[in-house]
Image 1: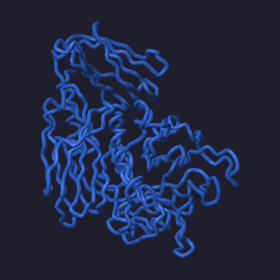
Image 2: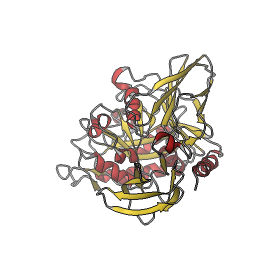
Image 3: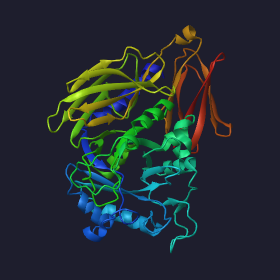
Image 4: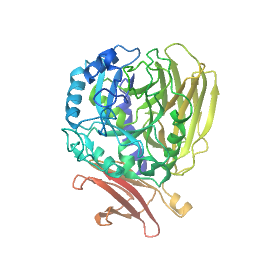
Amino acid sequence: MKFWLYILVFTGLSLTLHSQILNYYFGNLHSHTAYSDGNKDAGTTGVSTPSASYAYAKLSQNFDFMGISEHNHYSSSNNPGMFRSLYAPGLAQAAASNTGTFLCLYGMEWGTSVNGHVIIYGVNQLIGWETSGVPGNAPNYDVYNDKTDYDGLFTKIKSYPNGFATLAHPGSTEFGNLSNSSYNPIADSAIVGSVFKNGPAFSTATNYLDFAGSGSDYYFEYYRKILSKGYHVGITYDQDNHYTTFGRTNAGRLVVITPTLTESNFYSAMKSMHFYASDDWNCKLDFKINSSIMGDSTSGTVRPTIDVTHNDGDGEIADSIKVWAGEEGSGSYPTVIKVVKSTNTLSHTDLVQAAGKNYYYFIEVVQQDGDRIISSPIWYRLSIFAGVDELNNNFTFLVAPNPVKGTLYISTSLTSSCEIEISDVSGKIIHSEKLESGNGMISTEKFASGFYTVKISNGKFIQTKKLIIE
């Protein structure tokens, strides 16, 4: 299969997906009830359970979904105080509270403040490490994972069909020193987002005006840093409620783009990174490269044209729209390549992207009142075609989709035959074959889920890529 045909095949899939009418849903995935260390005002509000908290949230303005992410461990009563026996009832209350117009989800905030907190959804068992010292709940987990073992955690999350993780209020050395280490495909396979703003977690405000302050509550730099490392993550927004304030502390929202607000569509949108972070509770941000929307990975034979439309429900005009861009895995922070002022639209063609390189682009909007909206990226590869290997004394290749479950497509810039080898983490070659035209497809159904290396050789040069098989 020639490289141009590969592009047509996958572009066709993207067009089919995005030909659906997509809607915007505003909510929050980071909050707590009295099942761990939330609802601290339950004595006066009478709200202490997930069911009562969902009922409260449904009455909040411009609020379409809420996830309760209880702390996954106990330590001591209300600090954070989570029992394994409460996790299944929490899931059941979320399911019973769904109405079709408001989506209720239940998950966990895994980890400690020293090692880093991870927000987890789509996992129907409590993951933990406490083997003793928890009244009536020893061991205090359904699935064991050491509290310092983040590779183990991310591997477990990926084993659940709907499982995904986002990074909560990340510190520079947390999650196994993720942001200061080399790219980790295990982490990348499970993490879909990193937060823009968090909290204020212990606010009691219900007037929608108590926004997180500057400094540690803004995590935009961390987002840019892990993107520079090569991670494929979007950007989230967390209120981190510990009082009965769900949706009302401020107007900040995680905005998810999906056809309808079903649990299935929601999980799919989150895992596809079709979401953005917004200080504004009714701002609709449309960001595309061709037919691809934020969160997508795509490629083309022409330089990418970025199209943006800012549509605020209150009629605000964007004070500025910025396009950020960076080279995937370069280690260099993304930079602003285009700015427009006092307009709601932007169209820009990036004339700088080098052929054969993978770039990512994301959008920052600043409204006239200072509210900021940050998008998840679109990853774009400017393709190289036949003959370029002679010009560059090298060649390029793509494997897609990655992660893969089913058929893996291989496309190279070579015009002649080459050898492909797939090896597991121990270095054992589990598959090899000759690709006559430098392109082909392989069924991965016979391979175990896990992490692999794909090697392409044309007799002169060798290229390798990491591969995840689900």
